[in-house]
Image (cartoon, rainbow, N blue to C red; front, side, top):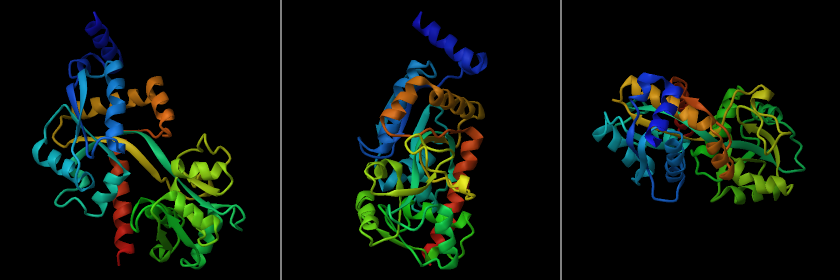
Length: 320
């Protein structure tokens, strides 16, 4: 009886033909050790996919650490090219490393990107008493002199915190963005202390690490790099609202082998879309500090390829 109910749910969601094409006993590769973000991504979606009747059987998580996701990526490309029941956790860290050529002999086109189901969005902030009150004011300063302000963040030079502020500057039409001064610290919290202490001008990071300092009044956020305003910062405008087309999403999502059928690719995209819209996953996302971020199927593939191109261009410029 339970199997009948599951089948009927799937049939209603995707049509009779898709119901017979359900993935069975799915393997989800987390390209890192247990406890990290990719492991979290696999393990949190597993019970929801099962409970919603979107797969036949269970989702088994396999940890495959190494090379910042590169071991898993090359394994999928080289040995799992047509596995119809395999998904792999991914994030902005994946696309950044692909863009920077850190996965030898493979590219983003060697897999299919099925969807993103949440994100930790970027913020750009200054000291509470800073003369700058908007992102456009910062961009005006950089347009006049790209080296005028010092930016700090918790990632290495060329990492995501560095790149997302350069993406915003590039979108704003700032010339010579590679001349923007960026200093790396071991954490976002330490970087914020540099700003509040007057030793740096601008902070770039994710909302999850910055929110405690924002709530304590130690950081003034001039823009969130999201599609829409964030519920945690409802009074802070997005970059897009300020005329700067920049989204800095540390997204959580999945890819599948390049050899999956078009039917299976679309099935996974539809399944993730239904998962993302469910109350069960919304509760999980909120409990773990993620904001809604939904891209699926062809839309996700184009988003990833555009992100890889943008990051590759910027990475080449700052490495010169």
